Length: 421
Ligand SMILES: *Cc1c(COP(=O)(O)O)cnc(C)c1O
Image (tube, rainbow, N blue to C red; front, top):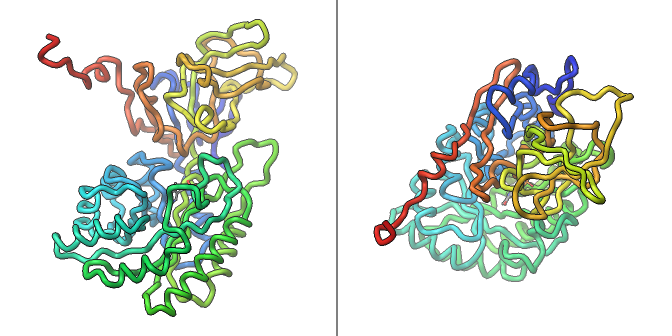
């Protein structure tokens, strides 16, 4: 459930009229709902064991205002770069609620995280372990470490967001787990604290989670028998969301939480979870204005002012997004089938194919739904189009939380070298 709905014939974000907002901030823009973020966080927190560290996956939505909203509810953060670490800290998330994942942490990033005193490094390879030990030695610190295990489980999601199969770059292969922990135990500046797994994203079936969690618990038992301290079990993120309102029963956080509790029962370990999409996806929309309605030979095109540089999910992994007219259509008004496309010069710059919508014309507004996760964070300036701004709504209030960069400011980011002047 989310807090975007029609009121008095206009699509609203909570109490904010999106047509009025579009007139104020210009289009395209991202719009996030505080009430929806809060609702999703609370539902998730209520579904998992009490002491669980909920480390919001910053890569899903790293806007400072979004992070601050979640921080106030008690969220920690899962970061995958030094930049995300900086953002999480800037949003007031305590270092001891931050875990650091990712296969390619650089020395500078390891230093920053050690200096901040983060809760846990989710180490993804033996070379990373050695690099971390070396950096920790230089700083006179001990790094709290969990290895991310690749459980070789098929998450049954899109191939480009599957991370738990042996063929992917993520984690330590299950067959090398024992050796990796034995190596870590010998390092003076490494403190083994736990074990970690994350098998992918937009997973809508509990079965792959059950397989991965069971595998991790079995490995945790084995590692304890080997004498290692496994006091934390990080179960990653990946729980999916309903992108279309017309099918797919929503994955149930309560069932997911109960599964995690059941499979880790009796382990006496603190759980860590890293939800991203589940919290943010349905808490955000991308509002865009129709530039042209164009009749093609075989298709009708709605050309809108948002492009794949603003929201790349459809182009990157064939993602489906519901699209609605901001002006509420009446039930009997004529409808049309459209390809909703952006202005970017790529055939993949398409948000929806052959979509049933009310008849729309230049100047009309549309809202692309479920755009709060892996939306703005993935935006680029392709076609010299600076990314869309972001707005956060709370009740009847709104604030621009990342302003639009105008073309001149964007131009000013580049330089002509001396020999060309
Ligand atoms: C991306 C990611 C997540 C979040 O995944 P969601 O599908 O957004 O919940 C969690 N943990 C790690 C390590 C990730 O890379």
